[in-house]
Length: 488
Image (cartoon, rainbow, N blue to C red; front, side, top):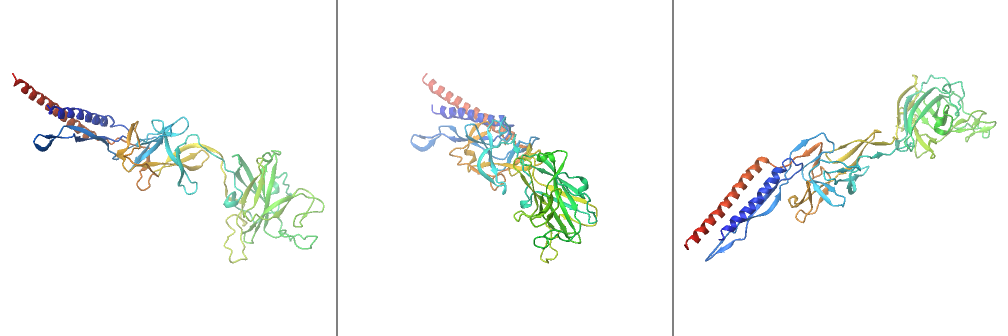
């Protein structure tokens, strides 16, 4: 009679085992699927009367174990398709804040611009330090679509910011005959002009013209009060530079070019820049003198020299593009001191004065307009890089990879997701590509690791085992029938 029970357990167990095999076969094309296998074990044995030996009471499935071998990678054309090559899982959180883990990287964007998996759960990333590019802070959803790049105003000259100009001024140029009027600048008031585009704090673009005016070679002015030469006045190989803006940019007449600042340039006889300075406008008038005792004749405002800020090191101008006046650095070259043998500056990296035509070599200006995200790229290290329509390229975040001490101990929750269990151990978070963590392959998906030929073999084995157990029940039934027939 007891012979029926082992066969009965076999039928039940191998019926369940066939479900395991069938599930693997059904998921042969499921992205990121990890196959399972049934681990059999015998049931508690019973003793034989008069013998220490035990007789088995049948079979059962001790555990259904996940097999987390690497699946093959399939290339795609979707930028949000990601595959992990190596150990680890993508982390995703649902709306209740519960974390799930998956190898299926067929991600997309939801209506709010977050990167989500096929279940709508947000893929977890970490922010990046803008200097070290290392992840910082806690994990959060990957907000990608709809990101903006804020504008950056053109710099004030500190830390090599602002406008940089490389040009040559013709040493044979003649002094313009028309006096310079900063309130209404005309083309016959200067010898040469360069232009640069600057950005205000709101991201607006403005064109600034830097014009250069040759000064006559003269002796220094004499301060009438002290009888001493006025510093910076007179001399040879001296030019003035002026920064011009359209009148509309400063709330004036749009048909006028207005000078909002300027300074002086001094060169050696061989054309090397020795000094680039700032300047300020002083209104002309009878008996008017500048801060250093310069005589300011009647007429338009006159530019007088002022020192460059020691904290910045380059001339500056101030322009009221918005309610907050903007200070812009104008880097015309570092200058040099030919009388100092220890001075390593060349005087050639900015403005020069050679006997050649006026020529612009290079004009650079920092600052940028606002931009919106145009495209992204995800590297093998998991860094999500954003490409904005203003030309800015910057890292946005870094995808987080999580691994476990015992991955087969994870609980399957369906929808290609797993969750932590006591058997799996605590999650260990890391960066893609670090030691022990998988790398990310974009435009790829990890295929199921199910080997279809192996599963067919298992299916045949399971079917035969089921048939054999059914046969043992049939044989036991016949034996019991024979026993009952003996009474007759």
